Image 1 (cartoon, one colour):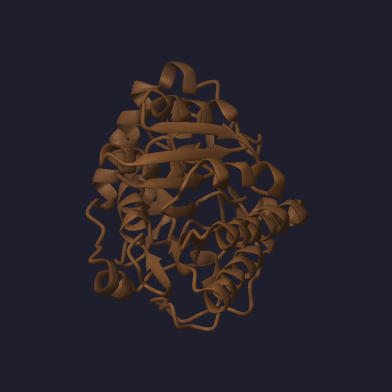
Image 2 (cartoon, helix red, strand yellow):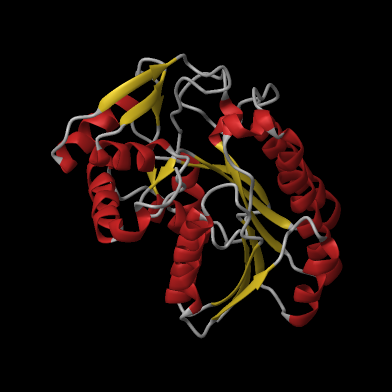
Length: 323
């Protein structure tokens, strides 16, 4: 049984990753500041599933606070740190860029420095496909990603660079995972999949930026969690894409699939394409296959059905969650 520190544990990806680690018999110390970037009730819902288990310890704290985190490294001997905490969302990063650099930059640095001080040698960090804006598809990890078009992407690039520095100087084994459009049950309410689902069901207009032809390499959350855990193996320093690995799926295609699952037609409120959005994403996942033995298992049709099933099972309380 290993002991892992998972940051942002009440978040969409981190909660699912933690559950799989617990199911495998490991001990997880999870931290989260439970900020109100989106409705905290959704974070509390995810957290409630974890706190029932004896091999899980939750501590409410902010990774930006070095003094608050260090006692955990004294109290526990961690086999690895999975830094899945982040300020996410391209559009909101343009409204409040400072908090993105603070959490994604300083928070990441704090964890790396504490790993150095306390001899923790394995680091896994969540990054983003947003770094690939303007690059040729399918995106490969060796592409130059030096022209981020949002503060969010820039802050993730900064965190990647700091991880490399700590690997180079202190031999911390660091695996950077660039996630591609993660979706599934209990996802963030600012993400299109969950918003579209509820708006279609409630008969409310969908806010659709652009003409709906923008496309994403959708990846189901359980696949992402499996890949994140696979990245705990020793690799030195690597950047690895975790994505669907298929042709990109347009937003309108997702809308149409949800219409069929819900048996209702969508009403679209079309808005201009957002300047900070990437038009298309498509992951080359050959490196993940080679180094991690990882491939996604859940296709878009199955993943959306599982999302709709979760929504229906939790509709009584989720209908009041702010989108």
